[in-house]
Length: 220
Length: 351
Ligand SMILES: Nc1ncnc2c1ncn2[C@@H]1O[C@H](COP(=O)(O)OP(=O)(O)O)[C@@H](O)[C@H]1O
Ligand SMILES: [Mg+2]
Image 1 (cartoon, each protein chain N blue to C red):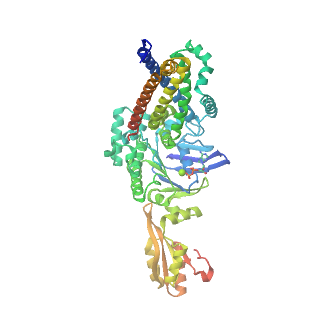
Image 2: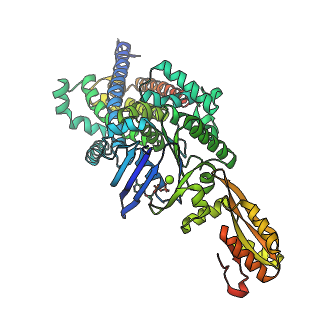
Image 3: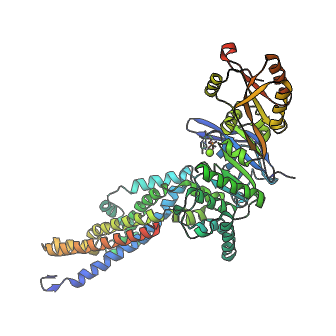
């Protein structure tokens, strides 16, 4: 990959590292925060373990408001906040902030939907044995839904990788940014296609790993 | 001696979308230590709600709940949790954790109760031995049959050595053969371990097989309660009679009676058979004494709470005055229902 005289390889490798960074930090932070909110959405729903109408309604409205916002608009909309928190509006850190927020809300719905499918009988059984809410969440709800949750997080990984390409294009950093700058804008389709290929490989690896994990968890 | 469970005028009203639902409505009952107490009723009668009021999974909207003499009505959720550790619960759908092995399921309540690992493992082995599932310890619930799952459920419910076991339709998802195995296991739990058992069911056969006391529920209320034998031999309420008929199958249904009449021209009577009436002996003696021929054309005698109960339907042949005298004599000791021919007076005359 040469553009003019300078080799693009170092920049390209740097872009890969940036993408992996953006995706993994977002997956970690957004995945965890989303898990917490998703569990809260599920447990505070009427008739459930921690039934609490005000909390449920507040969370539900929040998630429903943020989630449908197109990501590219969301990045620009919260830019002032991003600057406030990360001290910059450009580069991976500035990208990770809005990504993590968006991932949190996306994850919370995925988590909630997987938990709704749980058999309420097992939760009732744990209650009948004298287990408290926190124990039930950690030792019943999450383990019983683990298979579907792993698949949900695999889906999330793919969505975040996709998001990272878009985010990079707007605020800099990662493979999306690289493909735009060195491929599209310099009329070098080979660079674009090659970058695309690498993104596809990353996504595939994540998908295969996720499927394998889910199968192990579900013992199928 | 204090009762294991005392319910005093207990009520539970749900606020449903179409107004309040009085699921449990002023129930008063005592479950004594050592009882196998049946609560029977049709679907929607309020049985599940009632049993959940006992261990506080649902809170009463009126009345008092006493467990072993301790009033738990106003217990906080945290206090109720420690009460629940001492009460086993088994479910119609087993409600086992699919993410844990059989041993993991049985050991779960012990984790909740804070037992150290070694004691836990020893206790799990003991329990699996008791329910006959030692070889399934490492398997997962989805690899077991329904009967095996319920045995895991029972082992799990017994883990903390509770004094009280609540069973909500524990056999309703099982076939008749497996049902019998599970009922036998529950009987052992009661006899060998001395655990007081409350059995919720919609099948009178479960009550007659297992229980010594029964409460019949209808529309959230207890229609009648008492010792199983008394209720079976002298039901006072229509709902109770329907349940008993379905369990004993001893009395001819109208269509059966129709066919019996076609085959047997003599007078047809159904004589109740009870322990105090001397079972069949009374009948044979009285037939001989009055010079009446009786042939058994229908009936059944079974054991309820280890005592004989049922009825025999006979065709009586002889002169009418002797038969009338025979029936009058029998009625001193037991119930006799004469099935008068429809042409004469329509319905069967009773007593
Ligand atoms: N959580 C609830 N909310 C509203 N109504 C309920 C609830 N639980 C039970 N009920 C109602 O209470 C009545 C008794 O239900 P239940 O105790 O489950 O009866 P059973 O176990 O005898 O079939 C039914 O009419 C049922 O619809
Ligand atoms: Mg029920």
